Image (cartoon, rainbow, N blue to C red; front, side, top):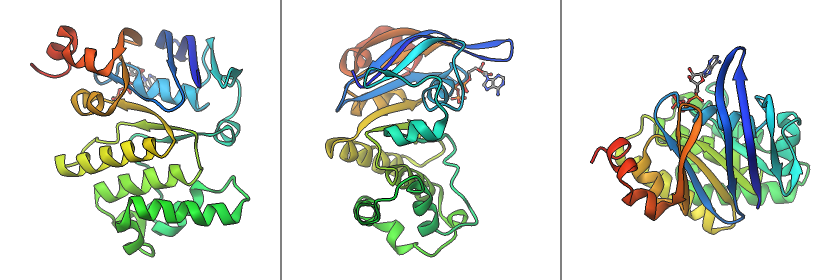
Length: 235
Ligand code: ATP
């Protein structure tokens, strides 16, 4: 297993947001975590990337515990997050935003290669290179946020609701790119409210309600499951 969460309990002060969350991601997979607003999906990602620390439980990456490490150490190990709401730096140019994604790296030649890779995925970013991030459209900002995360050269890419607030055609583009990045060798853990689209690109999925995992299965079986169809696909 590449990533393993074992009985994770995370709190905001006295409020318990995650309850015994156990899940795993294998190398090469796309795994999705779906659930309604407030279910605990973002909290799960923030606990994995070290912004929050669990009160109990363990998180293992390549079999080694990471749940007490600071975020910078976790990025160095090869985990990088695209946060919800994109959170690019609006005053900085596209080029500067991408450079920030690589700020923990010293391998200049490979950084340049990865920048070329990002432009091959998102040609529009090359056209907007010297434009301030804040002047991009929502879809372009999401592409920049994904591009910035790729600049850290992650083995595991964490995505928090990349489809949020975007038009269907842009969502389709972003999901296609996520599949492409995955087929090029990056493992993906995708948090989404958009259960239908997420399950269509994922290998496996987990369903979260009130801080707990209530279902886990292959994406195909989740798409067919009665619970998922009524609660998350509106069928
Ligand atoms: P969304 O799709 O809205 O981001 P989510 O599934 O990601 O939803 P979380 O943001 O992880 O859900 O929130 C889980 C629970 O923790 C919710 O009940 C939320 O109100 C609570 N929560 C989140 N952030 C905080 C905070 N900073 N302080 C206190 N409670 C919080």
